[in-house]
Image 1 (cartoon, rainbow, N blue to C red):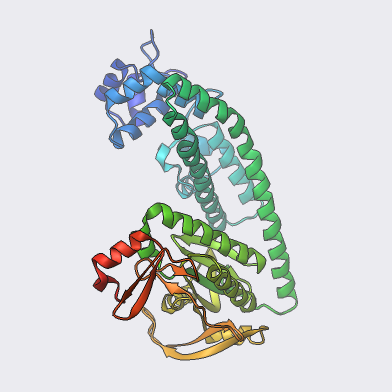
Image 2: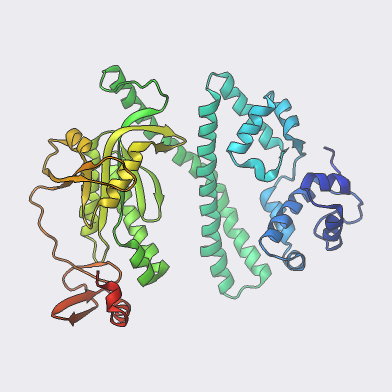
Length: 453
Protein backbone atom coordinates (compact mmCIF):
# COMPACT_ATOMS: atom_id res chain seq x y z
CA UNK A 1 0.00 0.00 0.00
CA UNK A 2 1.39 3.40 -0.91
CA UNK A 3 2.07 6.31 1.39
CA UNK A 4 -1.17 8.11 0.40
CA UNK A 5 -4.66 6.63 0.18
CA UNK A 6 -7.68 7.67 -1.81
CA UNK A 7 -11.04 8.02 -0.12
CA UNK A 8 -12.13 4.73 -1.68
CA UNK A 9 -8.99 2.93 -0.44
CA UNK A 10 -9.55 4.29 3.06
CA UNK A 11 -13.13 3.04 2.90
CA UNK A 12 -11.98 -0.46 1.95
CA UNK A 13 -9.35 -0.46 4.70
CA UNK A 14 -11.71 0.66 7.46
CA UNK A 15 -15.05 -0.77 6.32
CA UNK A 16 -16.65 2.68 6.63
CA UNK A 17 -18.82 4.08 3.80
CA UNK A 18 -17.33 6.89 1.73
CA UNK A 19 -20.09 9.28 2.83
CA UNK A 20 -19.34 8.79 6.50
CA UNK A 21 -15.60 9.22 6.01
CA UNK A 22 -16.29 12.45 4.15
CA UNK A 23 -18.28 13.66 7.16
CA UNK A 24 -15.39 12.79 9.46
CA UNK A 25 -13.06 14.74 7.20
CA UNK A 26 -15.32 17.79 7.30
CA UNK A 27 -15.01 17.70 11.11
CA UNK A 28 -11.23 17.57 10.87
CA UNK A 29 -10.96 14.08 12.33
CA UNK A 30 -9.13 12.55 9.36
CA UNK A 31 -7.23 13.78 6.32
CA UNK A 32 -4.21 16.02 5.95
CA UNK A 33 -4.82 19.73 5.56
CA UNK A 34 -4.20 20.87 2.02
CA UNK A 35 -4.25 17.37 0.57
CA UNK A 36 -6.97 15.39 -1.17
CA UNK A 37 -5.48 12.07 -0.07
CA UNK A 38 -5.22 10.30 3.25
CA UNK A 39 -2.25 9.09 5.26
CA UNK A 40 -1.73 5.58 6.71
CA UNK A 41 -2.32 7.27 10.07
CA UNK A 42 -5.91 7.95 9.06
CA UNK A 43 -6.59 4.20 9.05
CA UNK A 44 -5.60 4.08 12.72
CA UNK A 45 -7.54 7.24 13.59
CA UNK A 46 -10.62 5.88 11.84
CA UNK A 47 -10.37 2.71 13.91
CA UNK A 48 -10.36 4.75 17.12
CA UNK A 49 -13.29 6.87 15.96
CA UNK A 50 -15.23 3.69 15.18
CA UNK A 51 -14.56 2.41 18.69
CA UNK A 52 -15.63 5.70 20.27
CA UNK A 53 -18.86 5.71 18.29
CA UNK A 54 -19.62 2.12 19.33
CA UNK A 55 -19.20 3.18 22.96
CA UNK A 56 -21.79 5.95 22.55
CA UNK A 57 -19.46 8.96 22.15
CA UNK A 58 -20.77 11.21 19.39
CA UNK A 59 -18.85 12.80 16.53
CA UNK A 60 -19.24 16.33 17.91
CA UNK A 61 -17.82 15.24 21.28
CA UNK A 62 -14.88 13.56 19.54
CA UNK A 63 -14.21 16.63 17.42
CA UNK A 64 -14.44 18.92 20.47
CA UNK A 65 -11.94 16.75 22.42
CA UNK A 66 -9.60 16.80 19.43
CA UNK A 67 -9.79 20.58 19.08
CA UNK A 68 -9.24 21.26 22.76
CA UNK A 69 -6.87 18.45 23.74
CA UNK A 70 -5.36 17.15 20.48
CA UNK A 71 -7.12 13.92 21.40
CA UNK A 72 -6.52 12.03 18.15
CA UNK A 73 -3.06 13.45 17.59
CA UNK A 74 -2.05 12.48 21.11
CA UNK A 75 -3.37 8.95 20.46
CA UNK A 76 -1.14 8.62 17.39
CA UNK A 77 1.91 9.91 19.25
CA UNK A 78 1.23 7.49 22.10
CA UNK A 79 0.61 4.46 19.92
CA UNK A 80 3.11 5.17 17.15
CA UNK A 81 6.01 7.26 18.50
CA UNK A 82 8.05 6.51 15.38
CA UNK A 83 5.15 7.06 13.00
CA UNK A 84 2.71 4.67 11.37
CA UNK A 85 4.47 2.11 9.19
CA UNK A 86 3.10 0.91 5.83
CA UNK A 87 0.30 -1.63 5.99
CA UNK A 88 -0.09 -4.90 4.11
CA UNK A 89 -2.82 -7.46 3.77
CA UNK A 90 -2.45 -10.57 5.89
CA UNK A 91 -1.78 -12.60 2.74
CA UNK A 92 0.99 -10.18 1.74
CA UNK A 93 2.44 -10.26 5.26
CA UNK A 94 2.42 -14.08 5.32
CA UNK A 95 4.19 -14.19 1.96
CA UNK A 96 6.83 -11.71 3.16
CA UNK A 97 7.37 -13.87 6.28
CA UNK A 98 7.57 -17.06 4.23
CA UNK A 99 4.59 -18.55 6.05
CA UNK A 100 1.49 -20.26 4.72
CA UNK A 101 -1.43 -17.86 4.89
CA UNK A 102 -3.57 -20.48 6.66
CA UNK A 103 -1.02 -20.79 9.47
CA UNK A 104 -0.73 -17.00 9.66
CA UNK A 105 -4.51 -16.67 9.92
CA UNK A 106 -4.71 -19.29 12.71
CA UNK A 107 -2.05 -17.37 14.62
CA UNK A 108 -3.89 -14.10 13.88
CA UNK A 109 -7.14 -15.44 15.31
CA UNK A 110 -5.50 -17.16 18.31
CA UNK A 111 -3.87 -14.00 19.63
CA UNK A 112 -6.89 -11.76 19.04
CA UNK A 113 -5.59 -9.67 16.15
CA UNK A 114 -8.84 -9.98 14.21
CA UNK A 115 -9.87 -6.65 15.76
CA UNK A 116 -7.48 -4.97 13.31
CA UNK A 117 -8.98 -6.84 10.38
CA UNK A 118 -6.46 -8.46 8.06
CA UNK A 119 -4.12 -5.49 7.86
CA UNK A 120 -0.57 -6.13 9.07
CA UNK A 121 2.34 -3.84 9.83
CA UNK A 122 6.07 -4.36 10.15
CA UNK A 123 5.80 -5.63 13.74
CA UNK A 124 3.22 -8.18 12.66
CA UNK A 125 5.51 -9.44 9.91
CA UNK A 126 8.36 -9.77 12.42
CA UNK A 127 6.08 -11.85 14.67
CA UNK A 128 5.09 -14.08 11.75
CA UNK A 129 8.75 -14.64 10.91
CA UNK A 130 9.43 -15.64 14.51
CA UNK A 131 6.48 -18.06 14.34
CA UNK A 132 7.88 -19.61 11.19
CA UNK A 133 11.32 -20.00 12.81
CA UNK A 134 9.91 -21.89 15.79
CA UNK A 135 7.82 -24.13 13.53
CA UNK A 136 10.85 -24.90 11.36
CA UNK A 137 12.81 -25.85 14.48
CA UNK A 138 10.30 -28.67 15.06
CA UNK A 139 7.78 -27.23 17.52
CA UNK A 140 4.31 -28.58 16.51
CA UNK A 141 1.81 -26.01 15.29
CA UNK A 142 -1.11 -26.78 17.63
CA UNK A 143 0.76 -26.48 20.97
CA UNK A 144 2.60 -23.43 19.65
CA UNK A 145 -0.73 -21.76 18.88
CA UNK A 146 -1.84 -22.67 22.41
CA UNK A 147 1.25 -20.99 23.86
CA UNK A 148 0.65 -17.89 21.74
CA UNK A 149 -2.96 -17.74 22.94
CA UNK A 150 -1.87 -17.95 26.59
CA UNK A 151 0.73 -15.22 26.07
CA UNK A 152 -1.77 -12.96 24.32
CA UNK A 153 -4.40 -13.39 27.05
CA UNK A 154 -1.92 -12.91 29.89
CA UNK A 155 -0.13 -9.92 28.40
CA UNK A 156 -3.40 -8.33 27.37
CA UNK A 157 -4.45 -8.50 31.00
CA UNK A 158 -1.07 -7.09 32.07
CA UNK A 159 -1.43 -4.16 29.67
CA UNK A 160 -5.00 -3.49 30.75
CA UNK A 161 -3.99 -3.52 34.44
CA UNK A 162 -1.31 -0.93 33.78
CA UNK A 163 -3.58 1.38 31.80
CA UNK A 164 -6.57 1.07 34.11
CA UNK A 165 -4.43 1.66 37.19
CA UNK A 166 -2.89 4.76 35.60
CA UNK A 167 -6.32 6.07 34.66
CA UNK A 168 -7.97 5.54 38.05
CA UNK A 169 -5.08 6.32 40.39
CA UNK A 170 -3.10 8.93 38.45
CA UNK A 171 -5.16 10.63 35.75
CA UNK A 172 -8.42 10.84 37.71
CA UNK A 173 -6.69 12.13 40.84
CA UNK A 174 -4.86 14.79 38.85
CA UNK A 175 -8.13 15.75 37.19
CA UNK A 176 -9.86 15.99 40.58
CA UNK A 177 -7.20 18.45 41.73
CA UNK A 178 -8.64 21.07 39.36
CA UNK A 179 -6.04 21.04 36.59
CA UNK A 180 -6.91 22.45 33.20
CA UNK A 181 -6.98 20.11 30.20
CA UNK A 182 -3.52 21.29 29.11
CA UNK A 183 -2.07 20.92 32.62
CA UNK A 184 -3.64 17.50 33.00
CA UNK A 185 -2.16 16.30 29.71
CA UNK A 186 1.28 17.65 30.60
CA UNK A 187 1.27 16.12 34.08
CA UNK A 188 0.08 12.74 32.77
CA UNK A 189 2.71 12.75 30.05
CA UNK A 190 5.45 13.61 32.55
CA UNK A 191 4.57 10.59 34.68
CA UNK A 192 4.18 8.34 31.64
CA UNK A 193 7.62 9.29 30.35
CA UNK A 194 9.14 7.89 33.54
CA UNK A 195 6.84 4.88 33.98
CA UNK A 196 6.39 3.51 30.45
CA UNK A 197 10.10 2.83 29.71
CA UNK A 198 10.22 0.64 32.82
CA UNK A 199 7.37 -1.61 31.69
CA UNK A 200 9.14 -3.85 29.18
CA UNK A 201 12.31 -4.43 31.29
CA UNK A 202 10.11 -5.30 34.28
CA UNK A 203 7.98 -7.68 32.19
CA UNK A 204 11.13 -9.36 30.90
CA UNK A 205 12.46 -9.66 34.46
CA UNK A 206 9.24 -11.29 35.69
CA UNK A 207 9.08 -13.55 32.64
CA UNK A 208 12.61 -14.79 33.33
CA UNK A 209 11.68 -15.48 36.94
CA UNK A 210 8.70 -17.45 35.70
CA UNK A 211 10.88 -19.37 33.23
CA UNK A 212 13.27 -20.26 36.06
CA UNK A 213 10.41 -21.69 38.13
CA UNK A 214 9.01 -23.55 35.12
CA UNK A 215 12.44 -24.98 34.32
CA UNK A 216 12.84 -26.29 37.86
CA UNK A 217 9.45 -27.99 37.67
CA UNK A 218 10.34 -29.44 34.29
CA UNK A 219 13.60 -30.87 35.64
CA UNK A 220 11.66 -32.53 38.47
CA UNK A 221 9.18 -33.94 35.95
CA UNK A 222 12.01 -35.38 33.83
CA UNK A 223 13.70 -36.88 36.89
CA UNK A 224 10.42 -38.45 38.10
CA UNK A 225 9.79 -39.96 34.66
CA UNK A 226 13.34 -41.32 34.42
CA UNK A 227 13.05 -42.84 37.89
CA UNK A 228 9.80 -44.57 36.96
CA UNK A 229 7.83 -42.60 39.54
CA UNK A 230 5.53 -41.10 36.92
CA UNK A 231 3.80 -42.99 34.15
CA UNK A 232 4.19 -41.25 30.80
CA UNK A 233 0.80 -40.85 29.16
CA UNK A 234 0.16 -41.48 25.48
CA UNK A 235 -2.02 -38.36 25.49
CA UNK A 236 0.09 -35.17 25.27
CA UNK A 237 -0.43 -32.94 28.30
CA UNK A 238 -2.03 -35.60 30.49
CA UNK A 239 -0.62 -35.83 34.01
CA UNK A 240 -1.48 -36.65 37.61
CA UNK A 241 -2.10 -33.69 39.87
CA UNK A 242 -3.82 -32.53 43.04
CA UNK A 243 -6.49 -29.97 42.20
CA UNK A 244 -7.62 -27.49 44.86
CA UNK A 245 -10.55 -25.09 44.86
CA UNK A 246 -10.71 -22.63 47.74
CA UNK A 247 -13.05 -19.70 48.33
CA UNK A 248 -14.77 -17.68 51.05
CA UNK A 249 -17.94 -19.27 52.37
CA UNK A 250 -19.95 -16.05 52.67
CA UNK A 251 -18.46 -13.66 50.13
CA UNK A 252 -21.72 -12.97 48.27
CA UNK A 253 -23.71 -11.81 51.34
CA UNK A 254 -20.66 -9.89 52.52
CA UNK A 255 -20.51 -7.94 49.24
CA UNK A 256 -24.25 -7.32 49.34
CA UNK A 257 -24.18 -6.06 52.93
CA UNK A 258 -20.93 -4.11 52.94
CA UNK A 259 -20.59 -2.95 49.35
CA UNK A 260 -18.09 -3.60 46.61
CA UNK A 261 -15.26 -1.50 48.05
CA UNK A 262 -15.14 -3.36 51.38
CA UNK A 263 -15.59 -6.69 49.59
CA UNK A 264 -12.65 -5.84 47.32
CA UNK A 265 -10.50 -5.10 50.37
CA UNK A 266 -11.39 -8.50 51.88
CA UNK A 267 -10.71 -10.21 48.57
CA UNK A 268 -7.32 -8.49 48.23
CA UNK A 269 -6.28 -9.79 51.65
CA UNK A 270 -7.59 -13.29 50.92
CA UNK A 271 -5.72 -13.32 47.61
CA UNK A 272 -2.49 -12.45 49.39
CA UNK A 273 -3.01 -15.26 51.94
CA UNK A 274 -3.74 -17.83 49.22
CA UNK A 275 -0.77 -16.85 47.09
CA UNK A 276 1.63 -16.84 50.03
CA UNK A 277 0.55 -20.31 51.09
CA UNK A 278 0.68 -21.67 47.53
CA UNK A 279 4.23 -20.39 47.08
CA UNK A 280 5.23 -21.92 50.42
CA UNK A 281 3.99 -25.38 49.38
CA UNK A 282 5.18 -25.37 45.73
CA UNK A 283 1.68 -24.93 44.35
CA UNK A 284 0.57 -22.74 41.49
CA UNK A 285 -2.38 -20.39 41.31
CA UNK A 286 -3.90 -21.31 37.96
CA UNK A 287 -6.69 -18.76 38.01
CA UNK A 288 -8.94 -16.64 40.19
CA UNK A 289 -12.61 -15.97 39.54
CA UNK A 290 -14.02 -13.60 42.13
CA UNK A 291 -13.20 -15.07 45.54
CA UNK A 292 -12.57 -18.59 44.16
CA UNK A 293 -9.06 -19.84 43.41
CA UNK A 294 -7.98 -22.88 41.42
CA UNK A 295 -4.61 -24.23 42.62
CA UNK A 296 -2.62 -27.18 41.32
CA UNK A 297 0.03 -29.26 43.11
CA UNK A 298 2.29 -32.09 41.91
CA UNK A 299 1.16 -34.30 44.82
CA UNK A 300 -1.55 -34.48 47.44
CA UNK A 301 0.49 -34.02 50.62
CA UNK A 302 1.53 -30.47 49.78
CA UNK A 303 -1.97 -29.67 48.52
CA UNK A 304 -3.54 -30.65 51.84
CA UNK A 305 -0.83 -28.87 53.81
CA UNK A 306 -1.40 -25.73 51.76
CA UNK A 307 -5.17 -25.56 52.22
CA UNK A 308 -4.80 -26.19 55.93
CA UNK A 309 -2.38 -23.27 56.08
CA UNK A 310 -4.87 -21.11 54.14
CA UNK A 311 -7.56 -22.14 56.61
CA UNK A 312 -5.37 -21.30 59.61
CA UNK A 313 -4.33 -17.95 58.16
CA UNK A 314 -7.87 -16.83 57.29
CA UNK A 315 -9.22 -18.04 60.65
CA UNK A 316 -6.57 -15.91 62.36
CA UNK A 317 -7.59 -12.72 60.53
CA UNK A 318 -9.63 -10.20 62.55
CA UNK A 319 -13.17 -9.63 61.23
CA UNK A 320 -12.82 -12.00 58.30
CA UNK A 321 -15.12 -14.50 56.57
CA UNK A 322 -14.41 -18.24 56.79
CA UNK A 323 -12.68 -20.14 54.01
CA UNK A 324 -13.62 -23.54 52.63
CA UNK A 325 -11.71 -25.91 50.34
CA UNK A 326 -11.99 -29.04 48.24
CA UNK A 327 -9.11 -31.25 47.09
CA UNK A 328 -9.07 -34.09 44.58
CA UNK A 329 -6.25 -36.16 43.07
CA UNK A 330 -6.29 -37.67 39.61
CA UNK A 331 -5.52 -37.41 35.92
CA UNK A 332 -5.98 -34.01 34.25
CA UNK A 333 -5.20 -32.44 30.89
CA UNK A 334 -2.93 -29.41 30.59
CA UNK A 335 -4.24 -27.11 27.88
CA UNK A 336 -3.47 -23.44 27.23
CA UNK A 337 -2.04 -22.83 30.70
CA UNK A 338 -5.06 -24.37 32.39
CA UNK A 339 -6.08 -27.79 33.72
CA UNK A 340 -9.24 -29.43 32.40
CA UNK A 341 -11.07 -32.73 32.73
CA UNK A 342 -13.55 -34.57 34.92
CA UNK A 343 -11.21 -34.60 37.92
CA UNK A 344 -11.10 -30.79 37.90
CA UNK A 345 -14.90 -30.79 37.97
CA UNK A 346 -14.89 -33.22 40.89
CA UNK A 347 -12.56 -30.96 42.89
CA UNK A 348 -14.91 -28.04 42.24
CA UNK A 349 -17.94 -30.03 43.44
CA UNK A 350 -16.09 -31.15 46.56
CA UNK A 351 -15.28 -27.55 47.43
CA UNK A 352 -18.92 -26.55 46.92
CA UNK A 353 -19.92 -29.25 49.46
CA UNK A 354 -17.59 -27.86 52.13
CA UNK A 355 -18.91 -25.74 54.98
CA UNK A 356 -17.27 -22.95 56.93
CA UNK A 357 -13.65 -23.80 57.79
CA UNK A 358 -13.92 -27.22 56.17
CA UNK A 359 -11.19 -28.82 54.06
CA UNK A 360 -12.88 -31.68 52.22
CA UNK A 361 -10.85 -34.27 50.32
CA UNK A 362 -11.65 -37.37 48.31
CA UNK A 363 -10.50 -40.90 49.08
CA UNK A 364 -7.87 -40.56 46.35
CA UNK A 365 -6.35 -37.61 48.23
CA UNK A 366 -6.51 -39.40 51.59
CA UNK A 367 -4.69 -42.37 50.09
CA UNK A 368 -1.96 -40.21 48.53
CA UNK A 369 -1.56 -37.93 51.57
CA UNK A 370 -1.66 -40.54 54.33
CA UNK A 371 1.03 -40.12 56.91
CA UNK A 372 0.99 -36.34 56.65
CA UNK A 373 2.33 -35.16 59.99
CA UNK A 374 -0.17 -33.71 62.47
CA UNK A 375 -3.11 -34.14 60.09
CA UNK A 376 -6.10 -36.40 60.54
CA UNK A 377 -8.72 -37.42 57.98
CA UNK A 378 -12.21 -37.79 59.40
CA UNK A 379 -14.50 -40.00 57.33
CA UNK A 380 -17.75 -38.26 56.41
CA UNK A 381 -19.25 -41.06 54.35
CA UNK A 382 -20.54 -41.01 50.82
CA UNK A 383 -22.15 -37.91 49.38
CA UNK A 384 -24.04 -37.34 46.17
CA UNK A 385 -22.59 -34.16 44.68
CA UNK A 386 -24.27 -31.97 42.10
CA UNK A 387 -23.48 -33.00 38.54
CA UNK A 388 -21.84 -36.32 39.48
CA UNK A 389 -23.55 -39.61 38.70
CA UNK A 390 -21.85 -41.65 41.42
CA UNK A 391 -21.67 -40.97 45.14
CA UNK A 392 -18.26 -39.85 46.36
CA UNK A 393 -16.65 -40.77 49.66
CA UNK A 394 -15.43 -37.65 51.42
CA UNK A 395 -13.09 -36.94 54.32
CA UNK A 396 -12.44 -33.81 56.31
CA UNK A 397 -8.76 -32.98 56.70
CA UNK A 398 -7.87 -31.11 59.87
CA UNK A 399 -4.93 -30.62 62.21
CA UNK A 400 -4.66 -33.23 64.95
CA UNK A 401 -6.12 -31.86 68.16
CA UNK A 402 -7.62 -28.81 66.49
CA UNK A 403 -9.73 -26.81 68.92
CA UNK A 404 -13.16 -25.40 68.17
CA UNK A 405 -13.01 -21.73 67.22
CA UNK A 406 -14.78 -19.38 69.57
CA UNK A 407 -15.95 -16.74 67.12
CA UNK A 408 -19.32 -15.18 66.55
CA UNK A 409 -20.67 -14.99 63.00
CA UNK A 410 -22.42 -11.88 61.80
CA UNK A 411 -25.77 -13.25 60.52
CA UNK A 412 -25.97 -10.59 57.80
CA UNK A 413 -22.58 -10.58 56.09
CA UNK A 414 -21.05 -13.80 57.43
CA UNK A 415 -18.01 -12.01 58.88
CA UNK A 416 -16.45 -13.87 61.82
CA UNK A 417 -15.82 -11.86 64.95
CA UNK A 418 -13.40 -12.69 67.72
CA UNK A 419 -13.61 -11.41 71.30
CA UNK A 420 -13.93 -7.64 71.32
CA UNK A 421 -14.37 -7.37 67.53
CA UNK A 422 -18.15 -6.93 67.44
CA UNK A 423 -19.32 -3.39 66.70
CA UNK A 424 -22.81 -4.15 68.04
CA UNK A 425 -24.79 -6.96 69.67
CA UNK A 426 -28.48 -7.77 69.87
CA UNK A 427 -30.32 -10.26 72.08
CA UNK A 428 -33.43 -11.71 70.51
CA UNK A 429 -35.47 -14.61 71.89
CA UNK A 430 -32.71 -15.32 74.39
CA UNK A 431 -29.99 -15.56 71.75
CA UNK A 432 -27.26 -12.96 71.42
CA UNK A 433 -26.13 -12.00 67.94
CA UNK A 434 -22.98 -10.08 67.09
CA UNK A 435 -22.55 -7.66 64.20
CA UNK A 436 -19.43 -6.30 62.54
CA UNK A 437 -21.02 -2.90 61.90
CA UNK A 438 -24.07 -0.77 62.67
CA UNK A 439 -25.14 -1.24 59.07
CA UNK A 440 -25.37 -5.03 59.48
CA UNK A 441 -27.32 -4.51 62.71
CA UNK A 442 -29.71 -2.16 60.92
CA UNK A 443 -30.26 -4.68 58.10
CA UNK A 444 -30.97 -7.46 60.60
CA UNK A 445 -33.44 -5.42 62.65
CA UNK A 446 -35.26 -4.42 59.45
CA UNK A 447 -35.76 -8.04 58.33
CA UNK A 448 -34.64 -10.63 60.91
CA UNK A 449 -36.49 -13.43 59.10
CA UNK A 450 -34.23 -12.90 56.08
CA UNK A 451 -31.16 -13.86 58.11
CA UNK A 452 -32.61 -16.57 60.30
CA UNK A 453 -30.58 -19.23 58.45
